[in-house]
Amino acid sequence: MADEAGNREAFRIQEFYCRNMDAPIYARLCAAIADGLTHDSRTGARILDWPGEPTRDALPLRFIGGLHALVQAGADSGLAAVFRGETSDQDAIAAAVNAALAVHDDFLLPWLDGPPQTNEPGRSGALIVGLLEIARRYGPKIDLLEIGSSAGLNLLIDRYAFDLGGVRVGPAAAPVTIAPEWRGEPPVAAPIEIVSVRGCDVRPLDATDPAVEARLAAYVWAETPLRAERLRKAIAMQRAKPVDLVQADAADWIEARLAEPQQVGVTRVLMHSVVWQYLPEDSATRIRAAMKAAGDRATLDRPLAWVMMEPDRAFAHQVIRVKSWPGHDDWHVVATAHAHGAWVKNGVEDEDKRRYDLPESAKVEAG
Image (cartoon, rainbow, N blue to C red; front, side, top):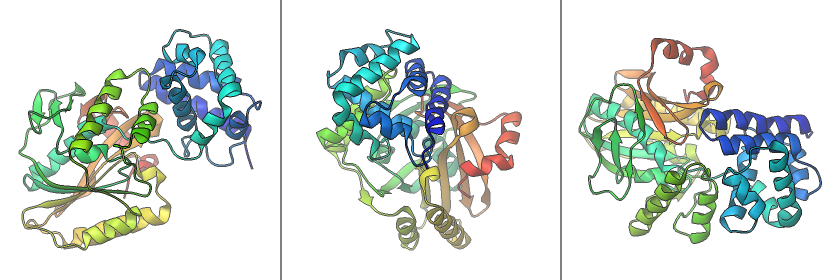
């Protein structure tokens, strides 16, 4: 049964995330929608009568992506002023949204049909910290497997350059350099060679399709023009050389990949970011079991590792955890990060570590 109050509350929850992620325009927009959205359009009625779990379904991001697409298409001047941050009055923002719905209902309604595609190259700047830890443990060579790859933008992790608090990783001549605001001590440098990168998604996107590129751009928050420019360059890198991305169920794919022969001296690594919460429980259970079984077989010549970047919802940031076999089969937190990789904090304070070790944090852990 639909719960209008709960569906409005999802936008207030998203407002909290946006404020904690330095996105004031989107925070104001979410607050205005939470209080001012009406049933007068089919899109508004569908949002308010949403039958599922709106936060898990990322309902606010679906809708705001559609609104941003209108702005990027030059189709609504009132909304454009909102997305430029020219008004902070909540009633005026709500009026602009409802006015857009009155004119563009047919355009906006389909944006609610599927999850947002917020595939973000900046997340590679956090994930590489986990991969550096694995390289320090077992040596530089890594065979990388990513689930939930979406448009494959983090499958370019071997082709990006990184500046991690002054520590340089990756090809110096890369078209994209990812340099998050660095908090804490720089990471310990280590040689790293990603020898293979493959990924899967239940609904992979071809980022080189102009329509898909426009859709991805619509999900980039208006406050972050650097992200929009980085997205454009990353897609150009895919046009120059495609990524290895296939359509597959994550559990099926990982089970098949773990059954393949593994090269001596190469660490096989499962990697994912902001994916685990969307997996069906059966798939999550199968992946845990497959990794445990493969970990039991792992040797120093053929190690196995797991690197994830998944959310700590209470604090609106991401936690980067690693575990590996043999010898390191407990989760270890190596960093925390902004959801889009704007900042990365290396390591964790004792207070933070205690929090991440609490049972409540289990919902964001993969195993």
